[in-house]
Each structure stands twice: as structure tokens, then as C-alpha cells.
Image 1 (tube, rainbow, N blue to C red):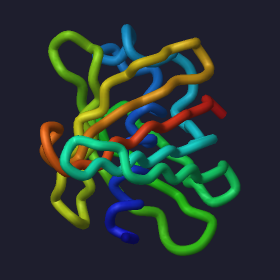
Image 2: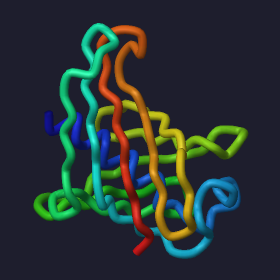
Image 3: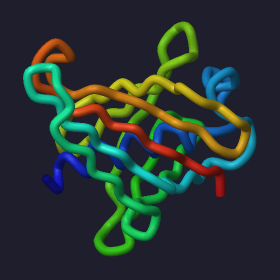
Length: 140
């Protein structure tokens, strides 16, 4: 479960990337630190929603995106966790790779209101059993 939460945190971190030319259409261009303000995990079994878990900001990480496509996720307890990030060619997705797990997650930017954004990703088979992650982020 901790590894799963680390993946979510990495996703939020990708949103924090600001000031990088390849993200100018995805993210605001000032600052590089974004805080997760809410995380929703919807669990689907056999394509049907069976559970929803919402986590509030007090237990969620912040993400520091750097211009060199690296960054780190910082939780309230423990050491920062490094990641790398990039965008797709259409600049509507952020791909974050957790360096410790060597696992990449692709997040769709589904809302962009300047200082706030909402990201979404699915882990698993979207036609069967899967998790849908929704992340709300705020520029710091």
C-alpha cells in the first residue's frame, strides 16, 4: 500500500513542474512546488465501482518539479523520494517515473485552473479490475 501511495505522490509531483517549456500548455509557468490537496482512489472490480477512498491534504505530500526533469516527493515523515518526469507530445499528459520502484505512471491533466489542477490515472485493466486515482493539486 505504501508503494501504491508513493506512485500517487509521484503523480502529484509531476503537476508541480513549472517553468519548463515542454509543460507550458499543461502547467503554470511559475514555481515548482505543488501540494496535493485531495486524493480520491476509486476501486473497480469487474468494471463496477466497489469502493471510494478520499484522503485529505494533511496526510498528502508536496512535489518539487525541477527544470531538468527531476524532482522529489516530500511526505511529512521520512526522506524525500526522487522521481523523473516528462510530458507527451501533445502536452496533455504528465509521465512520472518513481526511481525507487522504476515504475512510470501517466497522468491525464483533466482540469487546469492556473494555480490548481486535477490529474487522473488508471492502474490495472480498465475493462476489468482497476484503480482510478484522482489528484487535486495546488501551486505553492
